[in-house]
Length: 97
Image (cartoon, rainbow, N blue to C red; front, top):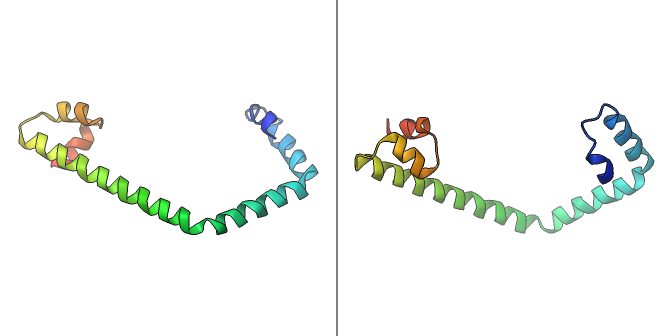
């Protein structure tokens, strides 16, 4: 399957993958069941990781917003703020309006 993945834009790709999957149905079914078992086994760790990622993302967003407002209050133009913060001018304008 991996070898043919490079050819996924070819017209015959869907039919070929369908044939491979059907020919290897038991193996694919076993792998799927194993993935589900691993997901259950590590569910708590995955949930905690997702929560930590969300918290970090929110914290980063809050810090970015603070920086934008500080720069705006200091008289920095929206274009300069956008360049410094790596966001679009439209995003800066939405935040400060």
